[in-house]
Structure formats: C-alpha cells, structure tokens
Length: 198
Length: 198
Image 1 (cartoon, chains in turn green, blue):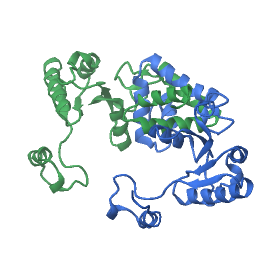
Image 2: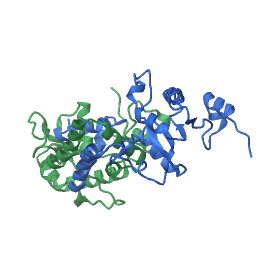
Image 3: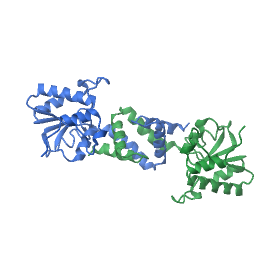
Image 4: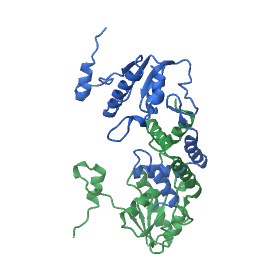
C-alpha cells in the first residue's frame, strides 16, 4: 500500500531484531523525513560497517583494525583473559571500568538446541592465548547454553593448558535484587557460593 | 568504546524515533552480522527513499510518482475527501477496505505548543479540491491538536467552499472498549453522539 521505495525500506528495517511492521513503518517514515545529508550519512555508515568492521585476529572482538583497541593496548594485563559470548559483553564489562585484563570473544555459545558445536566458536586462538596466561575467567551467561559452554571450556582448558587458573564469574543475587523475587536457581547459587564477611 | 565504524552506525540508528542506546547497539550489531548483499540493499533503500519518494501534488500523500496511486485511480470517488494528519493514517484507513473516496494529507496538525500554524500545513490544494467535492470528512485525531485543526478546517471550508458538506469522523467507544476503562472525554462523546438503533 505504501509507494514501492518506502515499502522496500520498511522491509529492510523489518530484518532488524525485534522490529515489527508498525515499528518498521515508523522508522522508514522517519528516514523519509530526514534531510538528505543525514540519510546519505546513514546509508554510508551501513556500508562502512560491512566494509571496515572485522574481527580482532587475537580475541575475536569487533574492530576496525586487525587488532582491536584492547588487544593492542600494552597497559592492559594480557595474562588475564575474560571469555564472553559476544562483542556486546565486552562493552558491558568495559563500562564498569573495573577490569584491566583482555577479552576473548567466542562469537556464540555451544547449544544443542540450535546445533552450535564447539568447532563453530572462536576457540583455536583461546587455547594458544591461555598457555601464556595466568587466569582465564569464564564469563558466559548463567543460562543453560552459557553454563554448558563454561563447563566445556573448563574441561578443555584443564586438559590442554593445565598450568592456567580457570575461574567462573560469580553467581548470586543481582545488585538491588530482592530475595523473594529471585528464582530458585539464583537463590540456590547465592546460598552455595556465600562468602565469609570481613 | 565500539570501533569507530560501528559507533557511527549506532549514532545513526539513534536518530530514529524511540531508539535508545541499547536498541541502537542491537541494530548496529545486527547490520554487522548481515551478509554484504543485504547490507548494501539496506543502504541503497535508504538513499532511494530520499531520492524517489515525494509528495503527491494533489493530496500530499507519499508517492514515488507525481500523483499517488489513490489520486490517479479513476475508480475511486474523487468527490469524497478524507482529511488526515499523515501518510500513516492513509494506510491505516486503506487497511479497513471500507473507504472508496480520496484523501488529503495535511502533513501536520495546528499546534500552539509546537508552534505549527495553518500556513505550515498542506491546505492550499485542499480548498481547490473541496470546491469540486461533495463531502470533506475531517479525520484528524481526537487529540487536542487534532480537534483544533478540525475546528479550524471546518470554519475555513464553510467560509471558502460553502457548498461542500463538512463532516467529522465519529467519536465514541473503540471496538471492544469496556465502559469502565474509557476516559471521561470518550464517555461524554459516546453519550452525546448516541444513535437510535434499528
């Protein structure tokens, strides 16, 4: 019902995650209302991401260079590796300002339901890096697939790099979490992983 | 914290209505995961909308041609004009399949708070068209600005085109609307605009 050019744009917006018809319409109409320079810049930035953005050859993080800004920063502790599922997790962790080590981005999680196998993940370089590291922190999510992946990596690292310390990020109540709103798994973890105070 | 090219794309997505930082990140990462042809097509469709999409010279609706598909359709009743705020409203009405007249898109509403004056709206051609029409249906929203615009148009049309019948779309309870959930304005309208049954 929309003119062809607008309909095309609506369909392109619908490919984005979580975008339904109404939202895609709103976005496409917003683009049609943008001034021409802004729309051109938008189109250009989409093409640039595809042509310039690549994976860091060391950690697998998204990068415009062959090595990402974190891996090429010599002030960071390269003997401490924080293993995450995706580039988004790197940003989330960087925002805390609490971590000075490096990362390893798996670009996925082992998932029997989705048919993702260990060989689909960015693992080869992890083993090479772990041999030179003091500690590998497994920071995949505490979901089923995240736990499966962490268990698999723990076993693999213990086998191939026996000298490295393998740790898992803590499970427990989130900050501001109310006890009676927490699910049973979270509560059970919060109990079993309790720590002595002071 | 993201690579430059990705950060640029995130900022472009943030210009879309209702898109915050998290959502823009998700969209930009989705684009970086698209295959190259899909991303190129997305970029192209944004540029095409800006170069091809225009306003129908008769009704002001969005169109790829000088005259929109509705205005150039001779099977529609060109003596019945449905006046709406935006192109989205045309689509919403067309989806009902209940209307065979033509439209007039104001591309805005008179708004004292936003400083939108009658001269900012697509009104000149409406007066010309109304002179040739049997009925003009004022179908701006039942919001403050929509009502203000409808009142203004009613006065203007009565003055300049005294022979045309000017009507307003019905106010009342929406389909499936529960009486005790309706606001007072809606209920008052539903009462005052009640109709005899059968």
